[in-house]
Image (cartoon, rainbow, N blue to C red):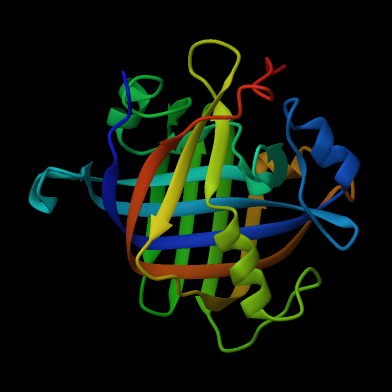
Length: 240
């Protein structure tokens, strides 16, 4: 069954980014994808996302559902008939809603797992704890006017890099191929944050020094749209 175009509002999105060892990053990717490098480093991350009014495009916003979500990501490149493309690889998505878990692989691409989320949020500070059987993420940040990163020379560079990675590939729920989901937004605005604490069982489990926390960006109240994307047939090889 073909996925319908989904509309939603990104009420809040934390984009947590790590510097990754390129060889370690490559070992985490399926065939057909390679790490997208900044200098000589790969880029990994976690997207902690609160969506509201999620619904097929033809349904009114008052009928949509809301959920907290998380996705571990690695920035990637691949080749198709148009040349080199940019996106992210997402091993698995987690959601507080049971609906994506039930519809994953049918109306929604990829595999989704259920997770519990504890959120404390104000205009200036956000703390999120996400727990599932296979992962835990904790993030505590404050909105800041200061910007610091070893990956990017400016917040604008970081924002552009992340916006260019609008297609997310994840293992299909059934079978050994990749499902794709492409994000488009009516506007793209990010804010800098001060990091108080960030932990991830996914990145913490990598070899020592392979993943180093770099920065966290914040997006709020952004109208968004998701459409299905198909991996190039010549590259859609079986994943590990």
